[in-house]
Image 1 (cartoon, rainbow, N blue to C red):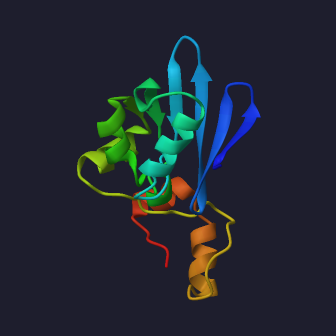
Image 2: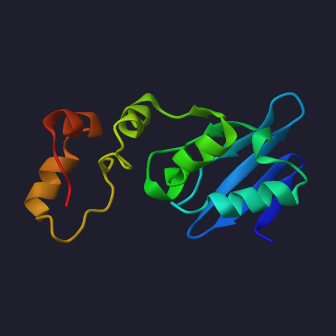
Length: 140
């Protein structure tokens, strides 16, 4: 089965290439953390049922970040559960407009791809990630 207990009230759901998690609280029902890639709703449904619970027991869905492997089944699960969804406000703005991923900006000192020149890399590493965002830099 794709559900693994981690601690009492905390379960890992194995999905293709990523994990989702269920938190089981007597007072708040189930909280689903991440929804996996598109098409993961059936596996998550099976996982919930294997715990003797129903999809309507999911009262909250928490999306850690707006990448398709973490939020890909969000719309389907939201419709099936009527759960409240929690995510970073910037990700929420993307979801409302139908986007599935925000632009990635590496932090200072992170490895750069070889297609970026060393001169460009040196200039980029001399700025903070906030400066890079303000400058609208996009990394290849």
